[in-house]
Picture (cartoon, rainbow, N blue to C red):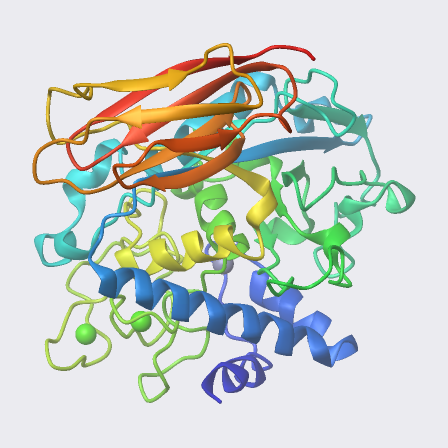
Length: 433
Ligand SMILES: [Ca+2]
Ligand SMILES: [Ca+2]
Ligand SMILES: [Zn+2]
């Protein structure tokens, strides 16, 4: 099948360097693992196939999915003791989170540069990022760890993946099924970053993936944030290496499909990204049109985050890419994000005529009653704890809805009801028993 072919073809080195900068080494590390673990490719293929099926279903349903995914991130800054500049300040990491939230929510200032022909497929992915507030032991944290490490004379090496373990001079991850681990270090040979695509197929036992301890993103310390005190090059100084690598981590492939030429299958496997013969290397030439598409021929989408273009030309993900990433967040990366419902509603009158939870404080069961707006038959009801974790989610269909509260720990919960025109949240208290 075509996805397997993709990886076989990957054995041909495809990349060039931009002024001695190698934008991303993800394909190289995947290819390398394939040599020692042939089943890795099958697992990645399987996950991608499932994600594509889910994504196609969502695109076809035409129902806007209002779920927002909030990804918990931890940054591990691993620096050489004699190179304090590698120990980037917190402010640079905050800037990186800001860039990610702009790019993934399509709030970036340069959306205005997206060419008109691509506006119909430009996407707000409704994926957000935040620094973890709780460490794996339940203790408060700022979501940043720092430690001295030793990547050797040339820096850490993507093929050895040595930044991800204390035993190899790096730092062990936090549980990769609960956090997006982002290692920041000096990377070998001017490589800006790399990431592993998801390989934990849905429904498998936890940790079934042989490389769960390696899941995450690695970034060169000089490409983090857009206020980096030592940017490696102005071409990549807007924090978009992280946008690109997290795209891989959430299942996306390079837009040109990692092999050169037009006579290949559908490249990245996503219909709304045009065919493209090769990566754009620091090139913002909007006249480029390297492959004929049918029925409509589009120019190359060099503003796509999954190309190798200059940070200054990148400004969009597509709807197809969005749905792949969201499908991955519902399956193999399910544990790393919590969800909320979008607070944007189409009607200014957001509250329901009636929305009650009783008793409150709750007994063993709390009853939800809602008066649905005219012409609406259902609304979604979600219960989340104060950390934003969803504890229940159901559809209200006009009948009183029972929320079993006897199994919930004591505390405050948010009950949010969302219909097409209304969006309201009520606080519910569960007392200690
Ligand atoms: Ca495509
Ligand atoms: Ca074209
Ligand atoms: Zn890449």
